[in-house]
Image 1: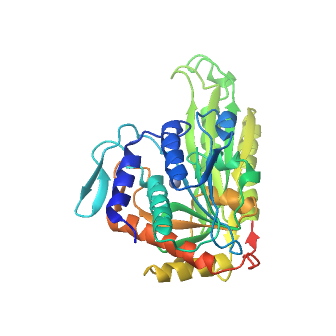
Image 2: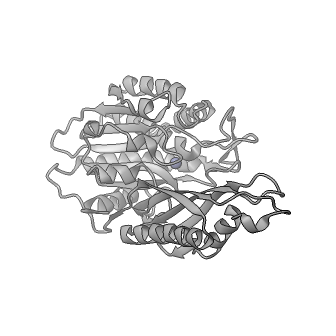
Image 3: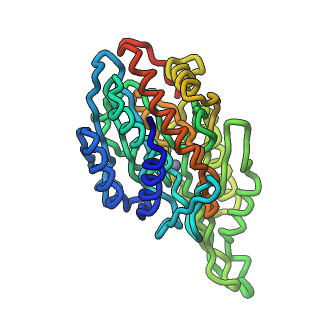
Length: 384
Ligand SMILES: [Zn+2]
């Protein structure tokens, strides 16, 4: 039986621990102890060193009683977005919010707490199960840098569940976009804005032309683009010499993603050339998209587990990336599971206490469902 009070207390405790991106040491040390107390073999990789953080990804492995069953992965990320220092969670009428001017950190502690509670429940009830792997990742926010730099050889699972999206428990994400980051520096020519404007080339005007002739926002149902930041210019009496722009493109279809990124770069290059300016453009593929079939084994067993937990299974795509993008790329078919987190990345972030409970129930039912399978089961093909 899931211990609802223990789960809530766990969530509160985790929410109170400061864990900004690349600063996950404190929460990682606590979680490592929790996992060791669950008789798991716990290790930490070197991702933190690579990305300049103070902590690596935490891996834990529990040997099951059913060696024939596939190895199942449950994963959530430890880092939270700003403002996340001094979070004080408050429960009122079944809804958990932050007390004040911070986020709540349900993204993604509403994934971590139910995973721990589900493992406790499974062990207390002596439920037969296969091997279970848990990964608590670092630096998921801001580009999946933890999973990107993960020790891939430590990934032992046959299939994975990443608890890291909104939507009521039972929400199963089978498709997520890939993302490119585009960093552009436009170099024009400075001159006196009053005395000698003819000799200047305004990098700001060039940037404005390029951006205004680009498609931004929603391109189609699976493709988006955004101009994220722009900075440049020094004073009103100087024709602006330099502008730096950061943009992104996303699509669940890799050809569309590549086409959109190329179009955005071409538009910058064209406008720069017309004005006699120059540009440096850097394109970084943050992660590839993934797509799992609704008829794949992982989708079907997710639905079965949701039903067993008394939840409605809802298949859907998402517009955001998660560690599942990398697990799929590393060959572990993985879906993203809704935890009920709401208004993530805002100070109004909240979650129903009921949803923490339902998420833990779902994890237990996934463990049960996977326990009934044989390793030889065919996992759905991952398309990227
Ligand atoms: Zn998240």
